Length: 324
Image 1 (cartoon, rainbow, N blue to C red):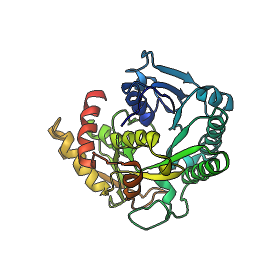
Image 2 (cartoon, rainbow, N blue to C red):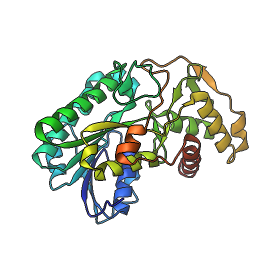
Image 3 (spheres, rainbow, N blue to C red):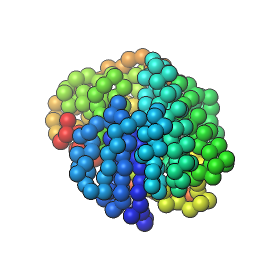
């Protein structure tokens, strides 16, 4: 894949996915600009590249149009990862989620249009499938959103489509499915399930699974997501102005996930095998099952995910054991 010598803006570049993208782009000899307000991003995520001459950190907020205009100046491509994630957070505070995820997104589109950015690739979400029960999830068949967060991510897709058709801005939306891997934060009220479980098991604390553990997800390792983003930047014109599922294309229950985690972590500490798992209530706004078709991304982007849940977990567990 030829992607070097470009100037690329990564919004939310100090976050989990954004910082991994920044590192990969730097490793491929691109100039990288990172825009982050550090609401959820972390400076330590940028430690490996912060002093690289091809890396520029801009502290700013996508809710501020001037920050977006400054960040996109002279940029070839944008990878837009900045957002307030978490279904529960959006249920508790829908206004802030909307300000960041919708108003901030629109600011970025405006800045890209006005500064003549070639292509805008953005983090969409599997939450857009909402109450659709069809499996596997296919891009053109969505339901009604089940949370304010899901509404914001669907609105992103609508805005991107309008900007493509009205202003000729090339856009690609990547509907991420339960991304996990190195640098994902295990702490805080809205921590993702895998790092949270890992942290609890490492501390020999009982993790709580929401519901009976039979809800299933298409867990997606970070390196699959990096691949999809890079392919989107170099994809042919016929592949733009649409959305793609980014996943492995398989599903595992939360009970399966927990048994894999216990198995892999017990190699570091055998006591982890004995930790008891608690079952709590189902979580408001959660969809029961998620399983992506990745055929469209394979056909049009040449996407070829290399990491199953098990293979990704083995990598993630090693990283967490060395870094938590």
